[in-house]
Image (tube, rainbow, N blue to C red):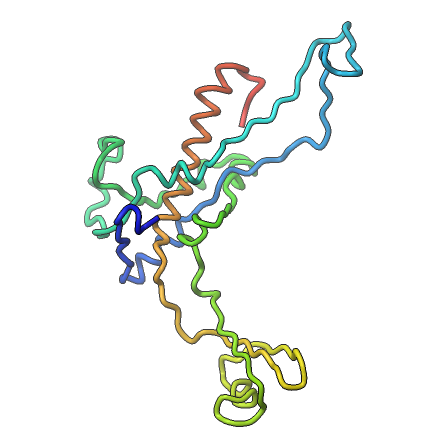
Length: 219
């Protein structure tokens, strides 16, 4: 994708920015589906003409994250807003060349558990690379001997040793935790993909489903 577009992502060098972006990541919409539903219409085997006609429908958005990745996304020139109190979010045009990542406190507006637990993490292959947690990376060493500088005994004695697995008499795998984390993934892109994809779902609900089904259709 990067070879095709020619885009170069700027890596965050400010650790406070890295922690800020990690903190504001929120996942996609979650749902609680009915385990059983029964339709009553002329196409159903158990159709009762004396009861109201009902249908079962299932809607999904194709290529949701693919669509989100085609929208405007952050790539470089990151800086902190100096005077956040003077920033008027409503004055920022939707097609502004400058975007903002804002952390807001809306918890006090939540009145029920559904709103509180609305956002859950989602993932897919391409999108997942922008959200990869480099803190969880490990090194696995395959060794065929016990002693020596690079043998199993020396690796197990290291302070970052985590576990080992024996595959045979002369083959051992040693898992080591990494002593440092290199933040070389554009996590700000993944964060924006998540937020943009949610706008697509809301547009579908409020612009199509709600006008069509009224109060019977709700999030």
